[in-house]
Image (tube, rainbow, N blue to C red; front, side):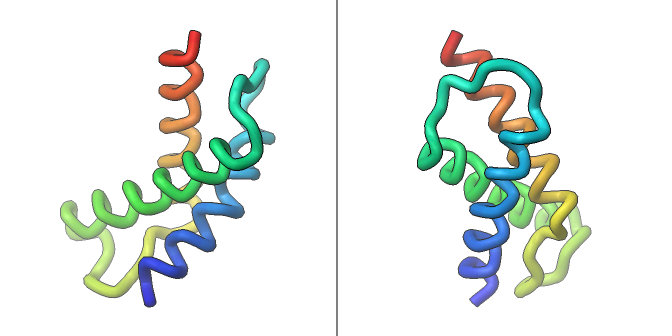
Length: 80
């Protein structure tokens, strides 16, 4: 169930990350949502491995937002 919450939070966070990052965005709606989901999942698993979250907990909203902003910026760098 925690993975489902991470995906739902990641979807919303991906859209917010797109609005917060300045500049032209070469990605569309689905790629941005996928990057948000990946950022949320990465923040969840990184937080668990570092001991920030217990098993069954998902990354917080801010953690997922930071993860998806980082992935979105990396995607933009690679797309150039």
